[in-house]
Image 1 (cartoon, rainbow, N blue to C red):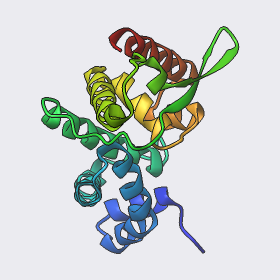
Image 2: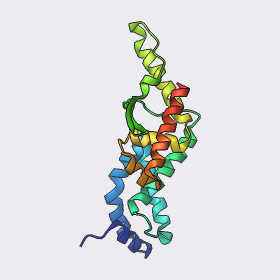
Image 3: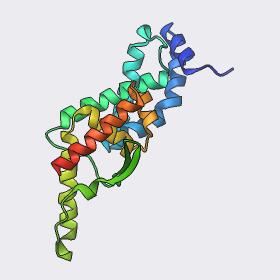
Image 4: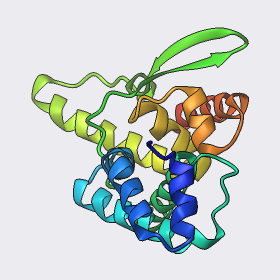
Length: 194
């Protein structure tokens, strides 16, 4: 019979490391992909994934299955990503090769916004188009990284990971309404900055 994540973590808390090895096999690839969506660096994502598992293992004695193991390990991973953003805040390195399209809901209306549409539309001659695109990416990257952590996280989870509001709410431990509010505020802030 296959044990649940929570049962495995309880076994691990009773000094059965083989239970934690099973959890690592279940979640390693998913966590690397999740973290890579934030840091956009596969080597760093692998390092942070290992750190997330190490922190979870060190906390095994205090683990209580109030929430799912998945929510707990993703929360640890998200906090590690926050720490990484704090370290690199002065020199942004986030890639903007992924299209930035997402939906926000305000008063029941859904609106799709392309973040590049928020940038000023300067007419440039064809040879300068690539340079202008890079400058726009740098402005957008800087604007996103200047958001508060909670607003930047919602943008990144929704844009890079393609996560729905309900998924984000579950992973961050808050309501869908809170996520929608954060997304609305983040988009509004980006529009003002750009």
